[in-house]
Length: 100
Image 1: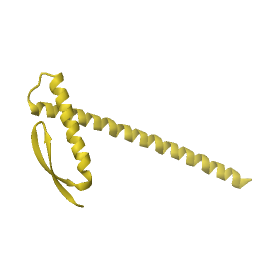
Image 2 (image 1 turned 90 degrees about the vertical axis):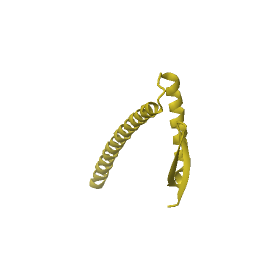
Image 3 (image 1 turned 90 degrees about the horizontal axis):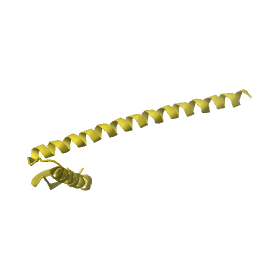
Image 4 (image 1 turned 120 degrees about the vertical axis):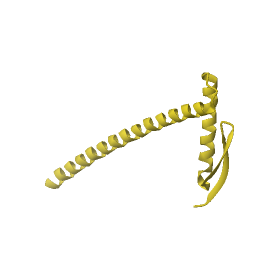
């Protein structure tokens, strides 16, 4: 794993990070997304404290993560049930064919 030292700017503050080289684009996109969201919140709400804005963003991103995690879990469960059902039908069909 090759590490890379980069600096990202969030809410007009620079943060040095050590990341895997292959993660650089994702980390920079995440920082850009965070800065865009902070800007949106600054315009929408009468909040000037950057920490409050960052906290609001963190809450929204965490909520989105929880929603996505639940969605993936449900889809995985649905897929597993569908595979089990298909496996059952195939097994039944094979058993019927082997009897005849």
